[in-house]
Image 1 (cartoon, rainbow, N blue to C red):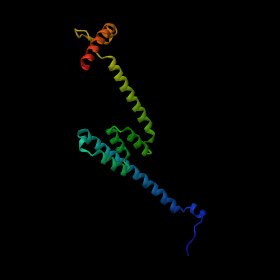
Image 2: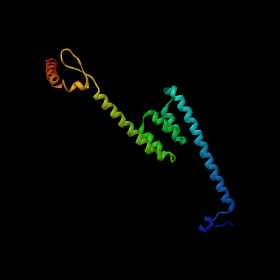
Image 3: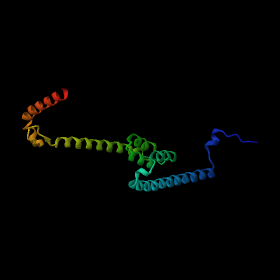
Length: 168
């Protein structure tokens, strides 16, 4: 004789079943913490090794293995080392604990890009130019505006002369 379970029977649990569920949840939480600690340890060791000899590692193979083991922090680190920003964002989103940090990463990425653009723009403004006059004196950014009118006519003449030589 088999007892048939109804919807009402499946919702009720015995105290023994409740204790078992609680114990299993605690064990699962302990396993997650252990995996997290293990992943952090591997990440520290890997980053120290890669500081000295990055070429000794097959990064694509490591990334594949990290995905299989759900080691998202290590995967994230390896993608950052490769400079693959889209994969870094994917790694953030793959881990529920790291998802909230994806916005900080994107914000920092845009900040770094803006800093690089500003550095390039400021370095272009501070360049010294060889004056196209026969004495080839250096022109500073401040003097560039003063000598631009005389320099432009001389440079136009030299440019035309160079073009004529190249075309003949």
